[in-house]
Length: 249
Image (cartoon, rainbow, N blue to C red; front, side, top):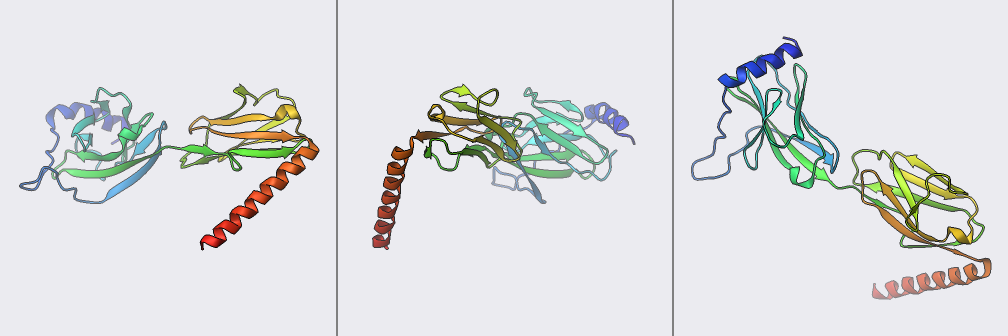
């Protein structure tokens, strides 16, 4: 049976099929899941795809249920839930539940049922990760006037690369047409470089990925002699902290 024919069969037969009740052991409110539970990891704000492999395309109506509240989400190719983020994408052997713009609240176990005899069940546990970004060297970075500056925005806990990463200095976007500043997108974030820093490059830099929380760093561009003094003080403080830690152990 073709995918189109199967879809029509699902819709036509849905009125003659009922959702199998979730069996619960006597004396317990929670029903026991029998069978393996596949795990799906999705990033907050992205599209989660939960698989449902079936062996007999014409076995019966295929439905998706959210386990925590027994909410019927889809019947055949139709979305039953009032939440239209839930849609079905199918082939002859895989009826996937797609959840658009997932949130942390979407995490949990989902069940795919095939109303055959006996009822076929597949389970998927959806886990949601919330991506964030970091800039190594934060919160403060001291650079000498005339030297190069390299800032890297790294995405953490991300399941997909960003569509874009915008860089801001003092709340002004500097990705484009900013003299002396070069920005490149990477698989894991973005890199901002300045070949020759000026005092005007001083300030707060923030990277804002399309799919992750932003990160900031304060860049201090210092004139030659002042830079030497400040770096010496930083090294002295680091040495003192190291000695203090040594005493503690």
